[in-house]
Image (cartoon, rainbow, N blue to C red; front, top):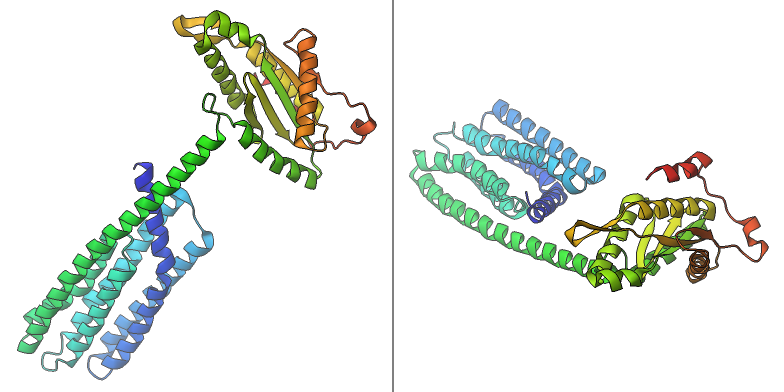
Length: 394
């Protein structure tokens, strides 16, 4: 099933569960009222059996609907709830549609029970056309099960007046089915429109927050996420570090191999970042050939291990350009976990990166504070073995 169709079906199932509690309760109330109305008109033993079954399934359906509400399934998990919903609903309508004609049909002389049952059957069918329009087959099936047995009884009854009631009920049945088709189509259109609008908004936000060349966060998106993450880490007394790096001699790559090769180099580096960083790390193309990485719950020593790992991966993984030609590249890294704001941390990491470039490139430098701030910094909850293993994940 394609994503759009699946999402629309998920929304329909969720809608059915959310709006079916009231009709399920009313179904039980209607059974009690009809039992009272028919108490002196039909066989009481048969009527009690029917009423007991109806109330039992009403309670079962309410329990099912409440279970869905409290468990709050999401995404594909919602689809698993379609089958129990459909089975319990059809069982309720089978009890109404087949049970009552059998009870009322035994009265061949008195037409009052049949008329009472007909009125209730029509009411239940009309409510089905309104309440269960999320899934078309459920809606049409429920109406058919409820009305067709009753219509058959009316059209075949010896009482001539009841025959014409059956004709009227037949027209009502056709009207309900037609209304179902119209409502189902209208709901499909609304859900498709809502899906398209949500998808368009998501795509627009992705375009606004993503670097079009590398697929990483752009600078604007990085600052939005980084500021929120920095505030969270500070509030929870967790460390946070920043890595800044850029590709060494990137201009030479453009000059020698062309700008297309330069673009492929940036895409290559972005791909390596996506493959080797943690899911909690935030990376971005900061500008030109420069990249930034934000690492929550990480002090500068641990960030230096990560930077060294990435430096090694970049150095050992050549860029493949057209004609299967390999370009060897390196990068210079700066690391910092010091700063009162994100701008401060980035500036400190940038300063360390330029020290790395000044000391021969293709190495990692950690920002050294000129104050005793480093002596009071927060420690992360990583073990030494975890830090060392970063170097081995190449």
